[in-house]
Length: 160
Image (cartoon, rainbow, N blue to C red):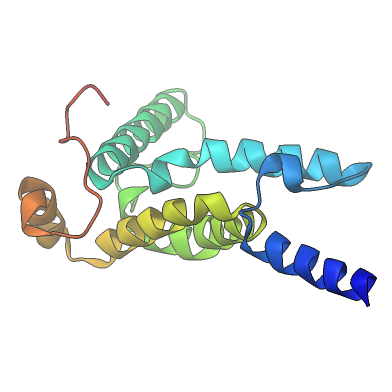
């Protein structure tokens, strides 16, 4: 009887304890997978940064890719997808990127590490931003205080 009560209390306390890297037990290939996922989550960290920082980062990324496309074109090479200024770039493809890449990865990560739930909330805020028409995006960035309850952060251009 005492062993059944101790096992039930152990399971109830573990369900309320946030999962952290130190509480996840892995072996062999699981460790490598965890590290690969951690690198990818880190690589995508701008997607769950405060909105103004994320929008600025995305704009800079698009410009970097367009600059590479310009160099490819100047060398007579085929221009890589999303690097051609005459076609939709990063900013016009963000909504799909969040749906197909960011959301599945970050929600899986947060399922393993519940202390990351706030990151998912901010990612959802940022994903919703890209569903707005472009003029509304500019208004959203220009007047962040009008959007109470959302994590906003620094203004575009604040050393991001």
